[in-house]
Image (cartoon, rainbow, N blue to C red; front, side):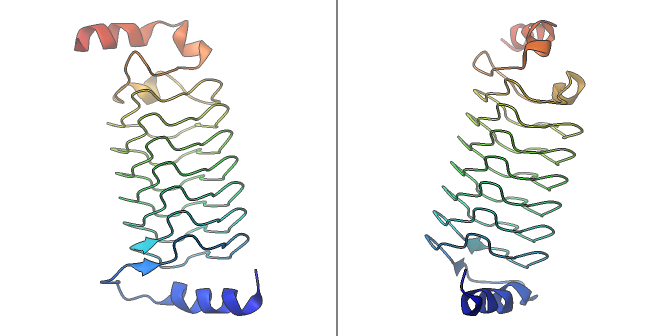
Length: 190
């Protein structure tokens, strides 16, 4: 990324007053951008390329990241509450400790992403694809996982999914399918 573009983004990102209007960064190529600790509430980065971007500690409350490509990005401990990540591409992204409460991740692609200790309470991951993702310590309280693909995930336990909503289309990792615990929950709900 050209240094003048990164400098302009740094100024925007350090603006600490709450934004009343949406900051429009749609469809931009922001690959390799550095947004650590940035204040990006209400930003719209729909369709943007943010591959290998650094967003650790960024504040992205109410951000729109629809169809954004965040492959290999570092998003550790970022605040993404109420963010819209519908159809976002997050292959191998590092979301360790990220706050994704109430976030919308419909049909998001999170193959081999690291969501260790992520807060996913009340998030909507309907149809999300997470094969091979690391979910150690992730919190799924009242998380919508209908139709989500959790096959091959690492660190996921039955107790993590105790209060999550799963359905017959949710693909669970083999160690949880064999346990059969989820069948009782689906049958009891029906």
